[in-house]
Image 1 (cartoon, rainbow, N blue to C red):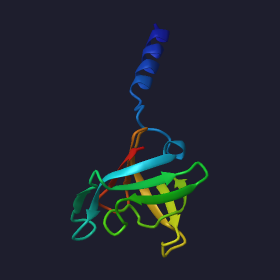
Image 2 (spheres, helix red, strand yellow):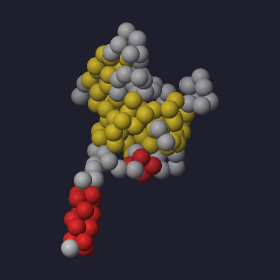
Image 3 (spheres, rainbow, N blue to C red):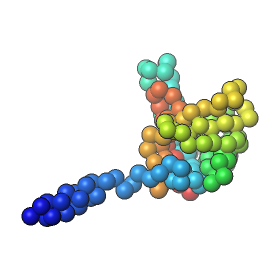
Length: 138
């Protein structure tokens, strides 16, 4: 009887795992298209302004397996729609997110971006106290 209880317990534990969440170190690799973001407005704690990227424009971020980061644009510029607006650089996975370093950043420490959610098809990053960037895998 104890073996049956153990078997049922193990079955329940494995069935309840969220299989959509994947390991950031490998799951982040690839090209992601920014579909929407909520940019802070009126202070970092009071809310944000939602922005949806039009279908005829695109912002892409790419994370390589060698630790390289790149942000590119199609039919738009960083002043209109962007994630960081810094072009290329490098990244590393840290406990609380992704540290991105790019040439246009004023700090050599780069920017620590929180990974709010990561699945095989969707990535949500948070760069501020409020607001988030939603990407889909290309």
